[in-house]
Image (cartoon, rainbow over all chains, first blue to last red; front, side, top):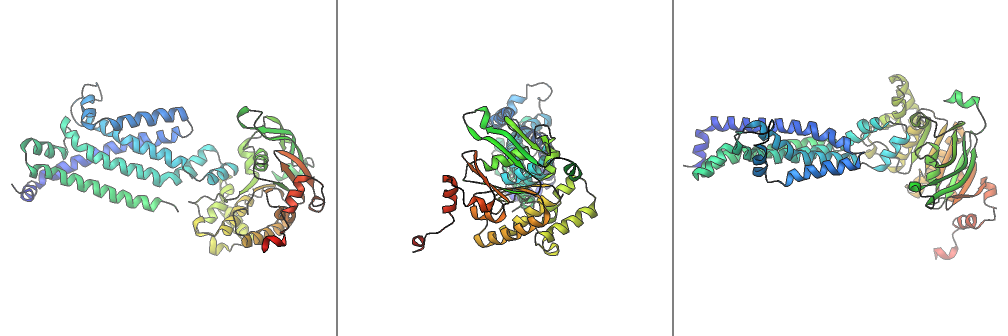
Length: 210
Length: 260
């Protein structure tokens, strides 16, 4: 079967799988941002915790995604088959780029700016929220962009543990040796990643100062 | 801050046998045996080579560093007993790279301390306007620009305006004109010295440039390896008989041979 005919014949299914995929990514990213950004802010002044947090986040990144999904299945509460487990794994993958860029963004600020902020009598939290955070925003967003692209890719593998999404077509295509089925999952996933990259890239450029 | 100032002694800032060293290692002394009195209205220039401890003394005044030995008094209160935030809001601070906030406009940068002190909007706006005029920048032209849209000299002017915005009695300046080209530097030095005379602030000014010290100072304090080796008015300073003073005065003259 020619891929294009297949795709146009099944566009309803593909669209709903894309939507499912997108939802998975958005939920995972929202959780990862809610954990990663505050944690990154918290570790700026705490070297021991910083080493631990960045170390643990790095370890998750080195685990092959299929293995991570497998590891999570037997774990009570967060594990099992389905979307919840997939989201946990996606959050663990997305955490490192967000955490690292938050930390790097907050610490990579011109020392003269921080020195004068301190000397003008700003409190530590004023410096964090009015100086460090606004100046770090573009770098943090770059981390979110990287994490989003990783998550869109890894989410295709989540289909292996029953989370649905575009990976369903890919796994089925591999099993049936059907290029058309594989492409029906791969093309929308690639388009999603490109779209996320472009849109977040635009936002990042708008936030970048000097 | 100003009323408190008027009621008390003649010394606005006083160092009493102060030493400062890194990480509790007394052997790594940055400054030692510093005793210094700075009366209101004085423009004290701390002169010295790189690493002589000038900036350390400056940071001991606004409590960015606290002395492990001795006491630094600001308005008769040791810096260790001041609330550091209150202390710093009463002391203007200008550094070499100006340290303007790149995400704030010129007006927002100048309004920093008034905003932190919760001044109302009209009062802040009027003050920003006044300060920009004071440093020779037309508010209509500059108020809405970002620091990256300014030249080095203009940035430094904004830095001075920001430091003066809340009308602090004390101004600390750490080589504020050091990174400018010679022509702009001379221009700013001349304007600043006129400004200083008009405002009557107490200024502690760090530099390694004797010419600048002679132009601005009411008193020059020479530092060498963390110790005060000379303290004199500009007129007296040139006549002092000290090796480090001669090292600085000889840097003023250019021998004709060097130009050949």
